[in-house]
Amino acid sequence: MKAIQVIGYHEKLQLTEVAEPEPTRPYDVIVRIGGAGVCRTDLHILEGQWAEKSGVTLPYTIGHENAGWVHAVGSAVTNVTEGDKVIVHPLITCGLCRACRSGDDVHCAQSQFPGIDTAGGYAEYLKTSARSVVKIDETLEPADVAALADAGLTAYHAAAKAARRLRPGDRCVVIGAGGLGHIGIQVLKALTAAELVVVDRNPDAVDLAVTIGADHGVIADGTQIDQVLDRTDGEGAETVIDFVGEGGATKDGLAMLRRAGDYHVVGYGENIDVPTIDVISTEINLIGNLVGSYTDLCELMVLAAQGRVKLHTARYPLEEFQTALDDLDAGRIRGRAILVP
Image (tube, rainbow, N blue to C red; front, side, top):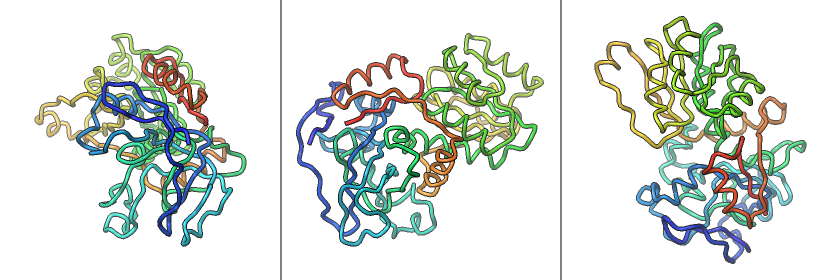
């Protein structure tokens, strides 16, 4: 089958032919890929940022946002059958460790992460497990929802966590209305009555944010902190969700936060520099957000089926992977890029 592989860090990906995966264990599921999301993490992988953390052996197939159709199953699989339309949770988990047994499968002690530390979905077929596949509504198509498997799931996880503390009348600042942010905005509108202020340096992204539910759009032109403070009575927002995490976004986010506020870190790339005395004196909370759980993905698929979360996509044939990556890196994509075999 065709697959796009990392052959070396700081090198371009390569299209190659590899063996088609087959079920070898009772709970294996082979998915015929209908869409694979192109994520900024893929760029970070090529930059070598994940090399030590993942410990993956090169070459390997990249791609961690996947959806498609069940192609084959192991002997013990009962939750899906061949032909079912599914989205794939990005982790393969054991189901036996303490984290899995308490429903916190994101922190599984034995997890594998296709596209990060094992073969992913920039290919025609993907090997995963019965614990990782979620059947999707017949009204949804794999290429339309593929990026919800990670970008959407990560955004949902952060937005749902923030929504538990947001009350009607609160203000929530969303930094970044791109691939993750535009999903997070929709989730927040579905889960909370808080007032949403979206900040992005791209005017088109700000316009998109307002179209999909943001109450206010702020262009990051150097005056964004003052604009947010003006809209929050000079106090800052109760919650800031930072989907960027680099390029000065963390400094801006903290400056936009009110006393005792929650600063959710989702995007990454730079360090957070805040004096500990400021953390103590204002009692702000710095909250990390990884990808969401299997249950989070099930809930997100409900919102997608209801039409309350829609993914804005740009589709590329699998063979045009380099164009998709270049467009992402240059900021030419509104929403998410999707590779379609």
